[in-house]
Length: 109
Image (cartoon, rainbow, N blue to C red; front, side, top):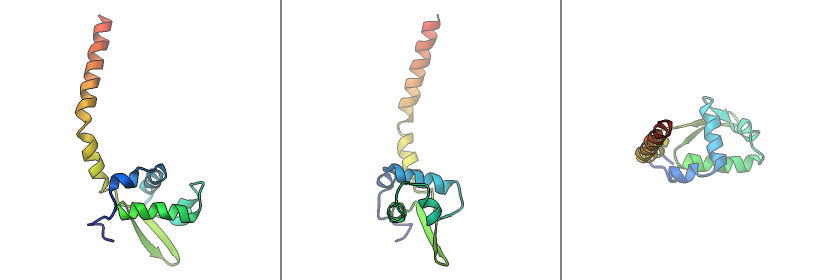
């Protein structure tokens, strides 16, 4: 699977809280082996590995073999799609905060 043509939608990949936690853990380190990631969850190695596969299919994770160990590294660039989508709605949050600020100022007067 190529990072240039992910086989899974990034939104689907980040929909699961376990996968979001994996992204968070990988963001804190250059790369981590599977066994270090597994101890962070109340599930087995196979289940964590399946979640990592989903992230890999979305292009969010790269893996590499180092001896007998597989190490995983975050590739955050596909998250840009999520950021771009969310930013489209920031104007609504800004408008609501402006209205709230105006209401608070009116109450003070």
